[in-house]
Amino acid sequence: MSTTSLIFRFKINGVLTDATSVVLSDSGATYGVRRKDTSAVVVAAGTAMTHGATGTYSYSFTDPEAGLTYEYVAKVVYAGNTYYFAGERAGGTAVSSTGITGSTIITEAKRFVGVRSAETSLTGTTVIQRARDLLHIRTQPAEPTAITAADVIADARELLNDTDEGNYRNSAELLTAFITDACEFVVAEKPSVLVASDSTQNTDTETAVLVEYYREILAHYAASRVFEIDSSDEHNAALAVFHRQTAQAMIRGHNEVPLAVLVGYLNDGVHAVLARYPYLATYTEQTAASYLAVLPFGAEFRDALAHFIAGRVLEGHPDVAAASARHYELAAFGMTNRRPDSLTTLIALVNAGVQDLLARRPSLLLLSDGTRTTFTELTSGTYASQALPVDESYREGLAHYVAARVFELGPQDEQSAALAVAHRQLYLGQT
Image (tube, helix red, strand yellow):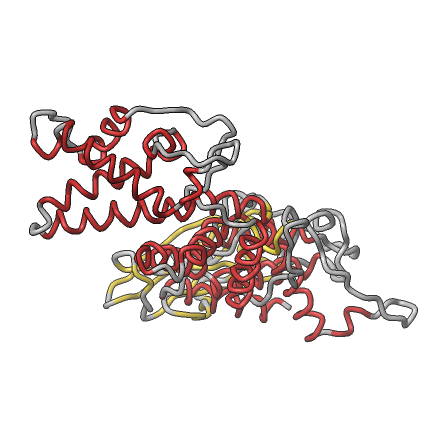
């Protein structure tokens, strides 16, 4: 027969809190759980719920029939007061003697975790493109589009948040002088800009640099020079540093970073994620020829990996140390504070759950003729159709395992920790 589990969470001001007692009972003490279709009592009034973690209580029972819906009431005593919380719960489905699929487990686990939809798979090329965007890496066109100093002045004024041409620090004369300095900055950082397409040396700096390709860099550099005028003001000094480092970081990006180097940084980032989530599939390092391959986790880690790559590209350059550190900070946050709930990750967790169950109950692999079967791990291509070597009676338990691991490996807050413990206990109790 199938089983149904109830999970009740008691909160005070949004915080999970232990009650004095929690039992299943309506106010008239006539039932704890009853069938919705016939009102027949399934769980008697006064049945205690099991305390699994702070503010988290559960109770499991055998379904009298498959496919039922239940009504239940949790009676809570707290601080001398009694409260009643009513709810409904869909019951288990008929137990099948045939193997279930990973898809059915994931559907149930997503309900426990609150996942609305699975995220897409992730490839190395997607991560590297995102890193290029963060670093402002652009492919220089064969025929660059010329711009004027007036174009850059307009952009710089937007960065300064001041379009008043009568303001001295915003005057065309001053900004034009700073744009000349900005052009010299670009050449100093990237001398190859003066090499013409015919390999001759271009002596006109502004003609070579005043192109769309360098427009953002020039505007940030000019803005930094304007804020430096009033650098005695702490706010202006900070803005001057910000715009100067932004220009420097962008010119680092415009300096071509070989694809092989970016892929190497990608591999390092993937290993950093796997160190945090060791349950994921093994990883074969990618190369410049194979970086289109799918990574062993989903798109929830795309930005974290892109920031990791950006941090590595800028690392070691003192003039952009702040930008590098910020990328690393964002990478670390994305790797540790993102709940791992993409489809790729959930499939990996189902595999881990089945392996754990089979290690605890090796007899599940025994066939009727006395031989043993084996478990082939699920993939994104087989999880919806491949039968697992366990029957329907283990579906909900394995879903609790997946939910427990998601809460264990996601953000480490008190509520997630409590939910992880509760789902872990339900998994052990039902398997």
